[in-house]
Each structure stands twice: as C-alpha cells, then as structure tokens.
Image 1 (cartoon, rainbow, N blue to C red):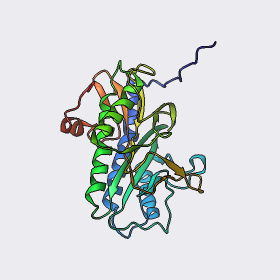
Image 2: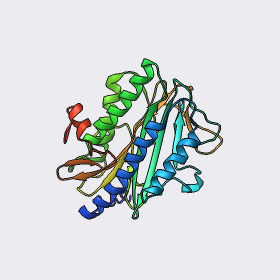
Image 3: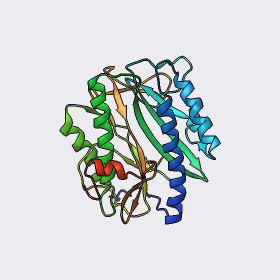
Image 4: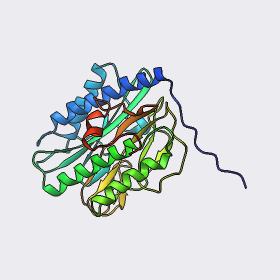
Length: 273
C-alpha cells in the first residue's frame, strides 16, 4: 500500500502576502462598488461591466474573465442560483431578490477572491436571516484559520455554526481553496466535516473560505450552460467568501477592507475560536 500524498500548499513570504493584500483590497473595494450599485432594474451584465471597469482602472486584471472559457468578470448568482451564475443582459434584478456576487482580481501576478450576497431592495425576513447566518459562518471559519490548526478545523467551524442556527442545507462538492499565484490551488476546503484532519496550517499559507447555504436541502444541479449551479428544490441560496493569510498573530483577511477586525470583534471571535 502506498501512502496517499497530501496536496502541496503554497507558502508565501511576508512580502508576497503584502502583494496578495493589494489584490485583496482591489477585490474588496470592487465588491463595495457593486454592492452600492445593486438595485431593482439593473442587470447582472450591468454589474459585470462596472466590475471590469473598476478592476482595470485600478491596475488589476479580472481573474474570472476567460477562466476555462467563463465570459464574465464576476459570477452573478440570483436567488436559487448558488454559484457560477453567468452575467447576462436579460437577467434583471427585481425587488426582493438576493444576488451572490463573486469577484476575483490579479495584481502583479497575485490573486484575491471574495464574494458577498446582497439584497435587492426589500427582502423578507427569512432571506435576511439566511444572509446573516451564511456571512457569520464565514467568519467562524476564518477565525479557525490559525497557525497550528488543521485544515478541517475551518470546515468544522463553518458547519457547526450553521447547524446551530437551523435546518439549512450546506452545499457539498463546492467550497474554499488555496490561493496565491493561481486563483484555485490545493487544497479544497469543504464547508462541513470533522475537525482535526488535513494539513497543519502554517504562517504564509493563504486560503479562500466560502460557505454556500441553502434555505432548503443541500442538493444541487448544474444548468445546461455548464456553469450555473442551482438548488435542486428551487429555494434560495446565499454565498460569502474571503481570502485570508495565516499569520503568527492570527488570520489576516486580505479581501476585507479592515482585515476583519470589525467582524471578529462583533462576533467575539479571535484566534482559535
């Protein structure tokens, strides 16, 4: 029997993490511009155009555009669309919708990747809670990303928080990932599982954590476009993501404008929580 090899994880120097911070800041600021632009009547292609212009105007290159043939700068996933929604001219946002906006940018060869789910106008209480639960679960996962922890400690933190909030469907088969000189690198980070497994986290490792949570079941389907993943039962889904670096002082959230300080304080989370 051969022992299965663990995937190699790229470890960055302090200087390289700073370069990733530049890419992360551009992604974070682009998402803030897009969040402000979301309103009833705008199309997902309108949002895509805004994103590409902002990224290029600020010295970056869109990560997603052309990636394995993808045609957008952002993934724009509305309501029952979980991830990988293709921006379209005819996809008009309406009051009461929710939209996941996933955005990536490259600066000087280094990647940043983050996502938010944004309400369109007024949304109902059930959807508002879904967004709150999904976003908070992201931060629980990020808080577990400390030096000396195991990879699945992050997965377990995400799942445990969601399970405590109600009978939500936690999407399987899609999840977080390593990131650095490429957008998607080893390892995959599921949003569920037992703690204490996988590689030990070391300073200089960088990951994207991205929970995807459904109002209904965890079951998914892929549309005929070969990209868009939807809930099998047609109920809504939310998706949040941040890129972070493992540091000796704790997780440094590279795509958050304040590196995560406000959220960690709000939830009472810190290293090892």
